[in-house]
Amino acid sequence: MFKHSLVPDGQPLVIKCSLEKSLNFESGDCNLTWYKVGNQTAVPRDKLSRIRQQKSLIWFLPAVLEDSGDYECVIR
Image (cartoon, rainbow, N blue to C red; front, side, top):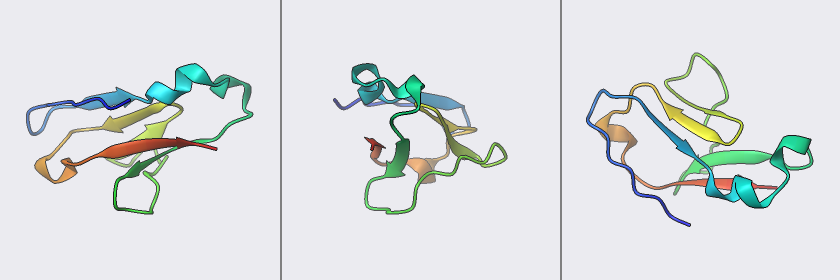
């Protein structure tokens, strides 16, 4: 499932992974990771990072024009 989000430059944005509903993610049996499409490096989990992932969410604090693109969540 794809979700299109628009946010003004400089504003915060949070997106929830739609795959999380279909799996028992909270049990710890699965590992969810966010990626920007075309980049094999995972979005950091560091709380000090401007873009970070936390459980099934990806946070942009704040979102900037350079963040534009497609992001995917992968569950393993």
